[in-house]
Image (cartoon, rainbow, N blue to C red; front, side):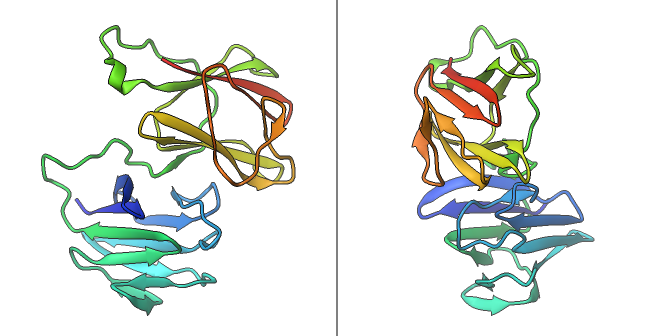
Length: 215
């Protein structure tokens, strides 16, 4: 099955299997793969899967889509092709069947998840795999928890305020994705520059207060 590997600089952000007929890439939180950088358009490009062949199509982006260094509007992809979108590089693999492939998140970099009850944690979960959580401590869904198992988890109200929590190895960062109502971290406004989260930190967004923990 084809896949893409997304990198920012030397850091691998995620590997995504291409299981959908169309996989959209862009800065907006409703994209299948959210790429949070101002050089990326809201709806930047899409990957089209047809009979196990994949092509990339630029969606009239501002800064263009590049394959192996050349600007493209629409182009079939070959194994090993490198796509450039903004500051991101994306390696295309025609077959993701190797046993070493990582497929932790086949749904993309961002999960616009609702706050749902947390499933029981494994009693033998190793310390090296600490998972962050956010718990609603004030607001309509008070008491609900969400495990931060994705590379990027977005939350909020589209058109009002959307924030994201990003996982980088064992650290978590929060930043504003879009909207006029900036989130607050311990009473201090949060912009588009990521800010690291610590145990017990409180995030306020659109009248809801979330508490961060890691265990």
